[in-house]
Length: 382
Image (tube, rainbow, N blue to C red; front, side, top):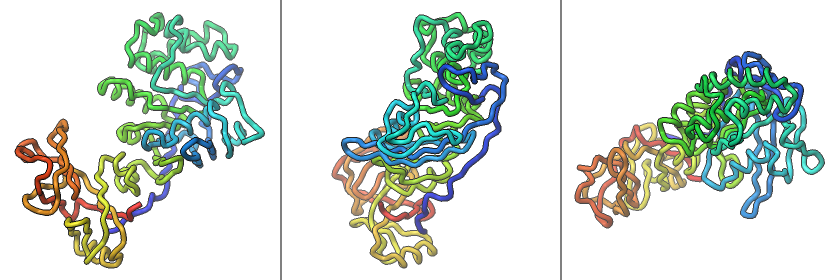
């Protein structure tokens, strides 16, 4: 059993849907306000270099027309800096940003104002104008671009219906729930027919049921719209994106089709994002060894491990696939309740077991951690 690389980036050209069309963000005559108008999706190419105190963000990014790319990583890894640079809110220290070949930023000579990039940013806060109705919020972009008020308002009502809020045009933000406000924010963004949409964890402040509803709505409404989505939730990435980038300390450490990256993480950060355990050790005698812990593998895997004897490796597995035994080398460090059982952390790995199995266990107890060979994957330790 051997490790794998990030794989070939998977790009799925999704069919453009009526209403998810492209134009500019900000005052322009090139805004398609008719929710049924089709326009070609844009291609985004960028190399974002931004110097930060602890490290330099240095991220190359290419998004095909109509593709959605998810960006994941630990807090502070540079994800929001990337979005800020794409949106024009954070100046580049190096690199270049272009949409359909039009250079928006090129450090240090060129910098396009955020309002004239054709890029919209949707964040955790809907940021609706509190004194305007939902209809006027959605109509704001087209009206600022010179579209007649009656046309912009009619289009706004169409967009509100498309995001699941028919008849809500006269309500102000204070009369809407958090989920409803996010729906209006999506309608407002798409009514301006942006070239590129940036999502900065727009679902994080919502309850699970509302987040699920908004996620489904985003998947439908953003089909055919070039999108970059920053999220901490692998569910969002799997539901919304074609490709996934893992970012660590300002660098891309893994890239590929979403399901491929989540199934075969190449780093500890990627493993944690995928909900997998990452246990470091080394190949020894055809097995994976960590202190007194020894994980056997299949015959083919054993031969592969024998070929890399002494090489640092990581065992990747699901905590729910591991089992606890008694009286072997792993020492319990702590126990944590989960919605489905108890997470038992030891110096020989992590196990999630039913409450009855964990009954009587305490920090300091000796246990055995068993993982079936077919449930473990070994990769080079990074």
